[in-house]
Structure formats: C-alpha cells, structure tokens
Amino acid sequence: MDDQKLVQLCLAGRPDAQKGLYERFAAPMLGVCYRYTKSMADAEDVLQEGFVKVFRNLKQFRGDGELGGWIRRIMVTTAINYLKKNIRYQTDLVFESEHLHPVSTDNPDVTLGAKELAGLLRQLPAGYQTIFNLHAVEGYTHVEIGQMLGIHEGTSRSQYARARALLIQWIKIRNKDPKTDVYAQSGL
Image 1 (cartoon, one colour):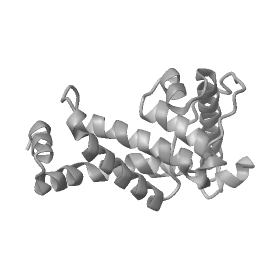
Image 2: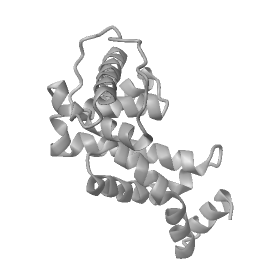
Image 3: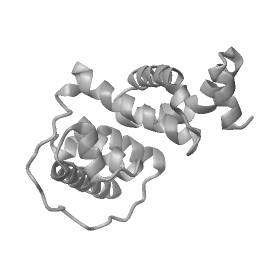
Image 4: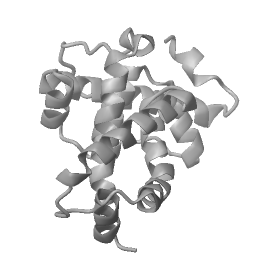
C-alpha cells in the first residue's frame, strides 16, 4: 500500500492502517531517536511520544514529500524537546557561545565499522552529539540548528567543530589500540 493511501486510511480511523503505519516506520525511527538519547529506554520513550504527535498531526501531511521524511522531522524535534526537558540531559545539553575555528581538517584513516562509529557518537556529551547528528547526519544547516535549539549559528558551528575534533581524536586513539577506552583517554 502506498503512503498516501495509508495516510487516508489512518485519517479515516482504521486501526489496521494505524498499526501498519507504525510497523512500517517504527524501526527506522527508533534508530533516529536512539542517535539523540543515551539509552534505548529513552529512545523508546521518544519514539512513542513522536508517534503520538504523528497521529495527532497526520492531517497536516500534504504529501509534498515522503511520509518517512515528514515523520523523521517529527522524531528529531521530539528528541530535541525530550533532551531539553529531561533533567538527565540538561547538564550535558549546554551550548557554549564562544566561537572556535575548526580544530582540524584532517581525516583520519577510518578503520571503524558503523557500530563502532555509532558507539563513539553516543559517547559524545549530549550537546555535541545533538549538533553533530543534526548537521552531519540529518543535514540541517547551522542556521537551522540555531533556530531549533535557540542558540547562535556560531555556537552550532563551534560545537560541531568540537564534536568532530573529539571524534577524530578518538578514532586516532582507537586505530592505535582498538581496546582503549577512548572516552577515558579524552579526559571527559
């Protein structure tokens, strides 16, 4: 069944269509939510809250783009709001306003698998992780990130540069000795 038909059936109140929409998008959206949180339980909370918003606002989906992209934007926004209101993330979700020049333009020889890289991303402080995900993974500009998070564009750029530099440092450490705890080595 195509997305437009699925949306129409959901709007008509068909439980089987709602279940189908959830089942079609839950797994990939859980991955999106997990990129922004520090635990699977938090990611599942964000996913559930996000799907409540999806079903509440489904009538606003005009079909201009892909349904998956529309749902993804809702999940990203829901994850950011979750981080902002959840006390466990508030101390880590501090965005410093000093501006930095990019620390390094070096690209280390990457010998990490996707799971290892995702693990390193999860070790970043929540603020760095959020901005890195928004820019490098989701493709938002620093202007858009600033608007989403209520920060200056330069703050977004500096936090991204710091996250990138830290990841490069960790990758270099990991390449030298794969058993090293890179988070402990970085002094964070």
